[in-house]
Length: 261
Image (cartoon, rainbow, N blue to C red; front, side, top):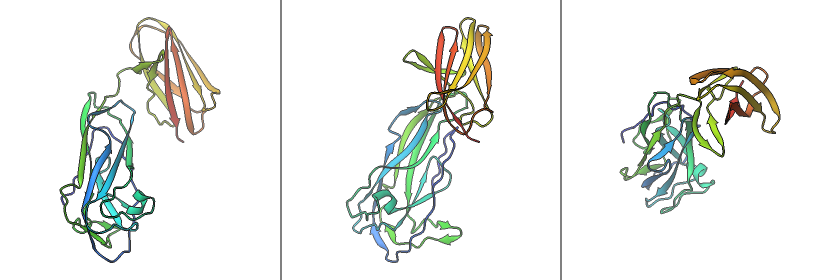
């Protein structure tokens, strides 16, 4: 089977651990992959997490053992990812006709900074290790199964990756607008921009997960206009998750901030 590595614009990559099995008998299978997430035409706002999950059905005559190695290529990485059957089946064999529970193989943030919404075909492909010529650290797989029909080894869905907003506001609800802090996760400093329809006092509050205020930054009165830029020094914060609340005149905004040292 041809190895297909599809890349989507503005996506960070998460990898998986590779493993080798030691089974000896080559058994005949027919793997059918079904993408569970994303769903067809799913829309991801900037900063949303894309979770790639799937099910795997064994349509072949022979069982797949819990210790057998499976290898996948998918759109969230340029490198193939290997796992054991048992990691998808709670350490059980996958009998003929059986289907695994839905499993997440990778996840990534929509970091589309291209300036326009992007349409991405997000796919997962089960590779036939008997013919793929794959190796781990230069060593070939100990092949224990063969896929007799690779026509159903691929499943895809089209998704829309929304672009990074030009201001700090991209979605409203419950009386608050959503605040985009960048970069996020952050180490030393974050920034945000606002479109202000009229002059207003701008104050940012940062709270920890217990709701305790850990930073209050008063930016003073900002003039009306688009693309007003603000920075925040994160030196007082330890690594962790925080909640940001911003008031700008009559407007209020909320967001989340992850600090990683």
